[in-house]
Image (tube, rainbow, N blue to C red; front, side, top):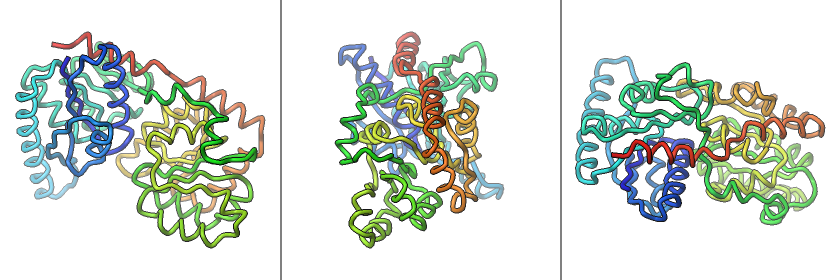
Length: 363
């Protein structure tokens, strides 16, 4: 089977694509030829190449801006991206094309449709953006993370599969994870500012770092932008507090282990939280990003309504993030109930279900 995968802009789009591809490879006993298509300067390029997957670059640009020149440039870039993607599809001759959203998925999705190659679309978030809405008209089948999305997409070809998880989520072991991060028996908070970092979350932690560390051990995934400054802040702490602060620029495949080691997460609410937090049974304080169409708020609302998370508004993070996290952490009954609510949302077979859809529609 020959498969093209497209989509990116964030780990929440790239990682589920790789999870499905790996599952399909296992199902087909390695009889899978895979090509990842995305932007050369996009996060998906590094993620795909780190996974040893062949990568083909195309140009892509979000259709944003009200100025006529900006709109014209976006349209021309999209046309160039589609033209480049047509060349990729013609050369590779895929049996099926699988895209996971984000504007980078549009050129390859349109090219697949123009060349009559089966297109399967996956929506990682709850709320479909313009790219997903456009491609939903062209796709043969649509897979969504949560049933809350289904009324916004064509019902006859949409199925709720859950969020595809990396295989490492099936092997989570809490004692082993805590040993990996050299943690003692005290509570642990995982603070992750997403792959690209979040200054609001990082600043809220930095300004009250001693208070965070007195209450819990911290695993902090800061992103590259703030890592050096936070490391200097850690080095200025007393030795006893330094040992409680585990700072990382990026964790990659070790992030699931960090989730297994933790009692509470503080995070953005990109698409991955809908699958990964439930799989780890990890309660969360979520700080939705207000930009990019506000889709993160819809993701966070799903977990909050289920009792698995609490939302803190981005503009209030500096004042309320620490007290909110500590209030939950100190209430063991509430923490347990939130963990159980998270596990109830877990869908561990999503990658298999999507892989089966790809096999069914192949050409």
